[in-house]
Amino acid sequence: MPECPHCKKAIDGKAIRGKLSFKPYKSCPFCKQPFTVDVSTKNRQVIATVFALISLALTLGMYFQGMDWLIPSIVSYLLLGVFIYWGNKHVVFVVYEKVRMGTQGRESKKIFPYMAIVFGTLIAITGAVFVVMYVLEAIVARTGEPDQSLLFWYLPFLFAGVIGMAIGIGVSVLGFSRLRTIRHQFPHQRCPTTRCTGNKLR
Image (cartoon, helix red, strand yellow):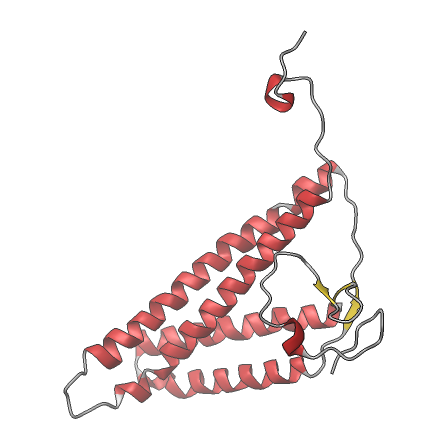
């Protein structure tokens, strides 16, 4: 179980899980100090995202090319689950440090949050489409028929949809979190225009 880098107390994931926040850090439930995950954990998160995208691609291959892609798709989801389980066992928390950036750096750093928001939204929508596809094709369309095997054979679509929605929402939240942090790191600059100050120029 990972420890708080401030008070060194073990933090149960249930204590911080489920608290939706756009901040790029979490607060220790004991000492209330901010912390975040280390670089290795962030790299594993990126790798897990790539794994999920590969699984999604294999699921699309099964839909367009036939059931020959079923086994690779199932194997990819199993590997993804094992990797996520292993990664959760090796999470390390570090002290969160607020970094100041210049104005030019701020503008360049805002590119990633916007891209993350757009990318996450598209992935979440795609995942929702897969879930709807599973419901319509495997459940609604087969209602009353004796052969209900599509409930099993189309499970990769359901898995792809749920995982895609989770990843999409997570990436979008990350984008909003980073954008909010960048905005809070810079004070509002004063300018002598009526638009900025709300006052008339003399």
